[in-house]
Image (cartoon, rainbow, N blue to C red; front, side):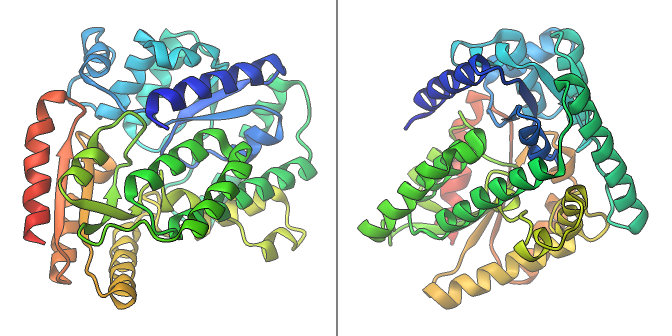
Length: 380
């Protein structure tokens, strides 16, 4: 399924949800917004996981919403709501947009979208540390977010409904772990991740069929490709980067990004679900256990480096092949760009080859990106 077909089908899916009386709640893809609460109240969570192009980025700048020195993904999100390209007309169906605080660009973009495109705003903030006080603060924010959802929906969200949603999203993530373990090319795996994150638990049946299909037909691995671990910023729907990597002879075997491991690794253990804890305490516990997220200041970078090193060592032991690392930095992304030099240095000290790939969504940079990727793969 190509991106055009995916977006067309997704538009039809949202339209049917609206006909059922459901509300659509959109939010930036890279934060700790608890989609389980959105689902528990009967709304549809919509993660903004759509890449941009020159027109979408320039739209944000030309209307003076954001300066050129702002994250290209953030500019794209504003451009999507301003221009509404045909395949993104489903954004007209968004009923609420969440303002969160993953980064400055997230806050600014979400506030601009709600204010200038007249979309009612919900607030959902998270902590930047995992101290006891930070966890208490996060619990208060979850309580406030739950209350906001109850007010706009006109109904109470029961603990039973939240637990039911937690179990649904746990099952979704467990299936994505199985997909992650399939030996298929990176582009195909990424498409599965992207669609599942858009559709949520409604994609479970399809995921089960995909897992069964690939297990039955066996490995599809290209033994001539250079295997890669992909970290940093996600490859969103509509981005050509995955094509450049595979055309250059690379294959991503592990996505250490929000569309990938950073998403489906955040599940809640059954033993905790069955422990009679309050459901919001389960969401706090998940936040506490997410030691690899870039909100886990001050130990994020050390944890990330240790995890990447362990994964690469395990992969080499299992396959006999080494992995190179592509650290993808969307231009002016504060959270990723600030760490790029030290991440590369620390990994190189462990004899891991790293390409820091900083770029925006401009078509003009495609040739340069291709050359850099091919040179890196040649060096491996």
